[in-house]
Length: 247
Ligand SMILES: Cc1cc2nc3c(=O)[nH]c(=O)nc-3n(C[C@H](O)[C@H](O)[C@H](O)COP(=O)(O)O)c2cc1C
Image 1: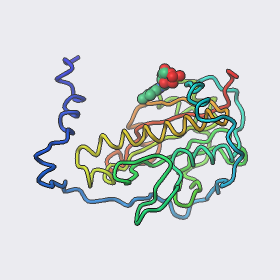
Image 2: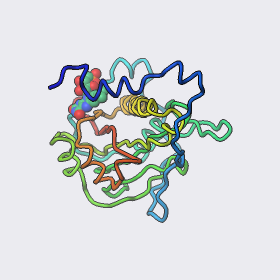
Image 3: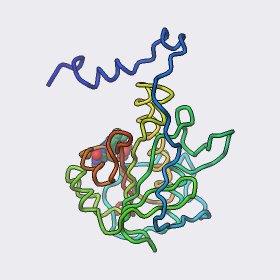
Image 4: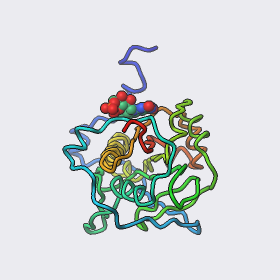
């Protein structure tokens, strides 16, 4: 194992530092922008619920009680519960000029993160892999079938995932953020996804569901599973959700 200072990770840190001289020269990277929203056309759609019951807990109680929960009672969650978690993580909340602002902040309001959902047990929704259409507030069906065992395998055999009701898989479309911020934009993609995930974890805790953030997975295998190219877009984080067996 190389000494810390010789790792690729430290090279990344060094190579993505903000440089006052470059900034003062108004340096802009030569990276073309990308479409701000990803949409899969001509797919079967699942309309999400735009109305849901009020929260069971207030923010302070949620913060006090939030824990990573990996022990799930196998069971359905409702479409309403899934909808409120999708909204909490990435929902549109306002428009400012050309920018569609969301529940979670994003560097430059560029929103590089896409959400895919592996569905295992959600009331009225077939098991399968779906993409979240943020603007249409709906799911686009990518493939049907139960893929939880595949996801467990990709996630280093973390067996608790197979009892989850669903799993959020987040990818970054790097170009959206890097066209403005260059190499530093890579950092912002990871920071953005952490905001999104935390919103999801707090929403899940508030409505009485258990959640576990997951970063341990084989990247290339996950990208293949999602059928994304691993260059323009790559999987960077996940979180599974279920009815906790602890309460
Ligand atoms: C970046 C990150 C990656 C994580 N990856 C995993 C994971 O792959 N598998 C897992 O079971 N837990 C994972 N966790 C959950 C942590 O183990 C958990 O947050 C930690 O033990 C603290 O417990 P708490 O969340 O209940 O406060 C991850 C958490 C973070 C923030």
